[in-house]
Image (cartoon, rainbow, N blue to C red; front, side, top):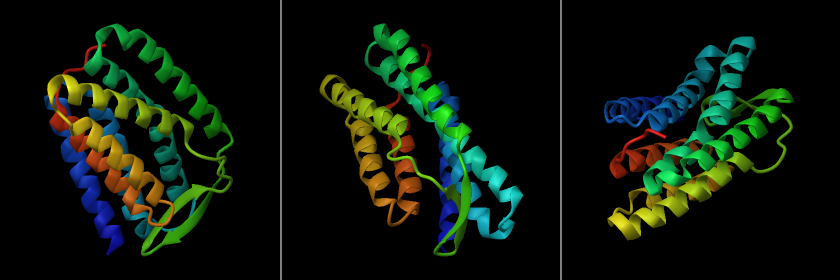
Length: 195
């Protein structure tokens, strides 16, 4: 049942990626593709089974999050103030490098949750700093947009992500659902990329 929910989330996230790309929002579209891939791999994990295939696909999940998630810092800067785009690229690059260094030492182990099989970090090194920094920046950008444009969606989506990411420790699907909510909120917020 849960694996089917992951599959459904993957389809929703992929559809949002297409919508974002058609709107010219390439950064969140790329992030949506990454989270759709993540949900699809977890949903298909038990069918793939333990072994090097699932481990390789799972390494891709971690790499997609490391490389794509910090790019939302740039998207937030584009939405709030174009003058912040250059520093946002610098911060996003630093966060990507920070996560990439962590990937070099990544050791995965299989873990079952409900009817899903995934590979998780065997040696978690603490909270996901790059994802937390990105989420805080999205919250701040969301507040600015709510005040300026009277659109609360980015703030609400980032707030839901923050809550669900914490709850995902006990129920992992909540993290993926929170990512879908954030992507939908970004689509509802609109705007244009182009930094």
